[in-house]
Image (cartoon, rainbow, N blue to C red; front, top):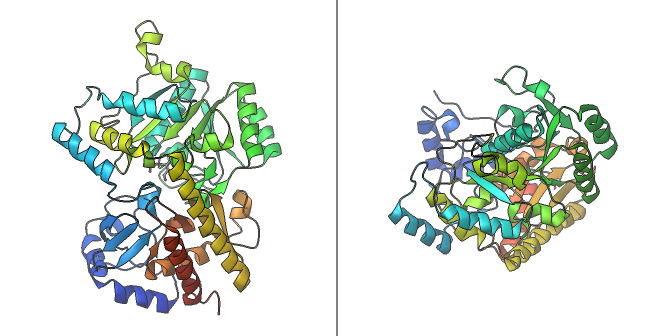
Length: 446
Ligand SMILES: Cc1ncc(COP(=O)(O)O)c(C=O)c1O
């Protein structure tokens, strides 16, 4: 007997959801017999009575199997920057499909083209290697940093998410950040140093204590799963300076933020990390990721720099498949300054609209973030770091997110709402109308 999750959302909203999505409900009951939580992969489930089963997507819209249309502010889990069914990406995939999807370990000539596109945009990337997922990219960046520095530990920030591996999961705010997630390899905690974001004095103390063992610091400039909490410019500059001083490899996780600007988030912050990891939007909707950076570090994979014998070998059967590279090339070419401006304008409008609603109704709701990336928080405290993020009422944000879906707008988990290139100001206005209705539906305003 399959049971539905009871998240405790307002009964009238749950009832409206069930009325609207009977086929999705049936599908959940069928699939949950075989697929945990009825989901083939991805996030698993968004913690709702049952998930929406999406049948197709186009531009900035989804259609579920009941035929309901939704404005997609989830963007396929933060990656469909260009929307769904982008004609140039479709054409590139179709052309490559005719030639072959992958040739195993024989190199795809498309790798150079995408690497050069990325190098032009992000000068810190002198050499790069492709992978399948952001998790894999981060693990490989850690491996490079450990080999380069001959040190064993890595540091990450409290609350930040960098993928589903043991080391990257520690301290992330999906789980209880103060205790290791279940199933972790024993002793993982000993190799990972957790740092408080945006706290220069505390970080300086910890880094000085750990510096002789610390191979790398991994950071995400605008922390997605913390509802797009940005690091301050001052803090990012501090990170660059202290890592340089102590010979620690600074790894910038741009799995999510790469399409923020032509130069990625590192361009926005004006810093040059040693290594950068990519994922999500780099593949234009297909599974592609990458890690790259300084020639002397990534060059550890290169026999030509080491008398014919590379100090480090990293394998990945499906890393950089031609069909994914073709999609990635078509996508990255479309991340133009005009497109970034368009996304920033829409994102600014969405945040300003939510903050205006909060003021109008005198509720402690706040929208933060940068460019196309917005996160909603329910707290009177300004969210700037993990401590202030933790003051937020996650249940209220989750209930609001659910009520929004019932109103026809799908955001991401953790109360995130992204904009994509096909959207117009009319879509943002629809989002804001739905937001006010959802607040009434949840009885957060009267
Ligand atoms: C910042 C960041 N890094 C890494 C990852 C992991 O990427 P993947 O799910 O492709 O392994 C994610 C996933 O959401 C992410 O948000």
